[in-house]
Length: 383
Image 1 (cartoon, rainbow, N blue to C red):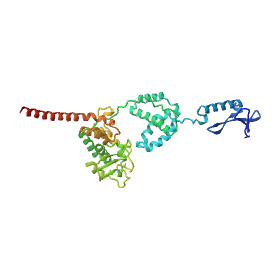
Image 2 (image 1 turned 90 degrees about the vertical axis):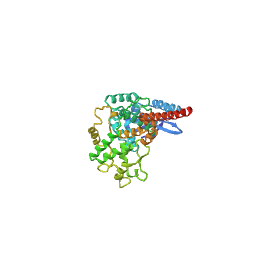
Image 3 (image 1 turned 30 degrees about the vertical axis):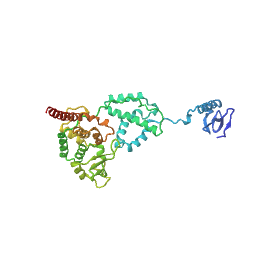
Image 4 (image 1 turned 90 degrees about the horizontal axis):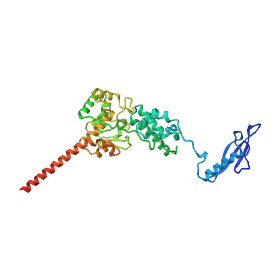
């Protein structure tokens, strides 16, 4: 390539190619130069064979100079907007260590419902209307509102993280989107008799791990995932405490280890501090509750004739049962919140109606006591 030669236009240069030809003559490339932040910038404009000329190069340079003067971004400064799938790859790595179950729930939802729709779109090409349409389609397909909401939350988090990681600076299409109304809070809880029947049936199946996990959840309110994660160093037999170090909301808490639970955990205490309390048959961490639990529930008839998911008994119902029993014995919402590991009391409000009867009886006892003292005072006055 020949050296650059000045043209009659300021900041416009030309250079002849030693290889490219145009009509039997050397093709000519046009370059422009200008200053940006005190630095001299060189930019290739194009070839004569591509339709460029000194005049066109001069016009392009003038646009660059005007853009710099008014603080606009230059074309070379504009990075291409990433595809959603590209940011997802970074996000997928992040959730492995920052979300429950190593982010498997997000991974499954992305692969099943998001990837095919938006994976190959640039992030500025996904609109709020597109997400509204996805929401409508997923609900029509029969997905639960909670699942649809989770899909939208994943997209929102991908955008939010892309801002944090400086991968994308555009808007978030989830902003302003109305989320599906979720009413999936468990309402059904077991009676003491039903819980005893369940544990007895699990014990008869000779599946000690499933029985012991069910007993632990019923007596402490631990989630299935929290039980799966328990290790030897989480069991404090000196102070009768179970440390929950990897809960859903990432806030460590303690559960009391009493009576039959303590005896069971003594038997299950692993030899090594890093050992799992409830390993699978291969010594690895359990990832799902065995289907045997569902079969036992079916055999006991707990879900007969029930179609509302909120009224069905599942393993998570044991945690709900624990909280409901606490409410029925008159514990405050704050106490229940702390024992369940909820971030706010608002999450515990669902149990308030169970406490209401106890409040009423307390008020009745107080009124009876007041009336009794009032009657005694009246009798004294009569004397």
